[in-house]
Image (cartoon, one colour):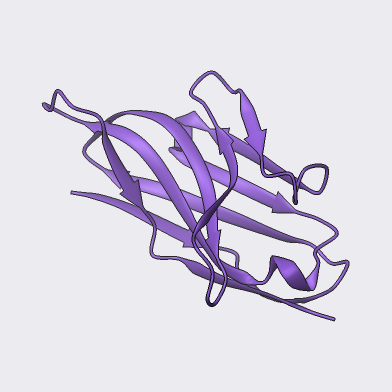
Length: 121
């Protein structure tokens, strides 16, 4: 089994910063694309930022220039540095990864349990 465990969410004032972490554990052979999604109440889950195995990144227009995604392959961990936070960034944030487990042929998609980020005005 594979587990993705997030940490770093919380309550912050507008203009503040938070850093989310996601650590993958289990019988992992390789991790491909990693990403962060968020879902606000009454809205669909949306991609916030993604990073490929080669380090290429992409961001939602609403967070570009404020959020930075990074990864540490040695630790099977990726991060989302969130600066200049706004009330509209309030959501549950989920980490996601495409990974291959030991002795399996297929790549599969895994999600973290979600962590709440609340930005007060």
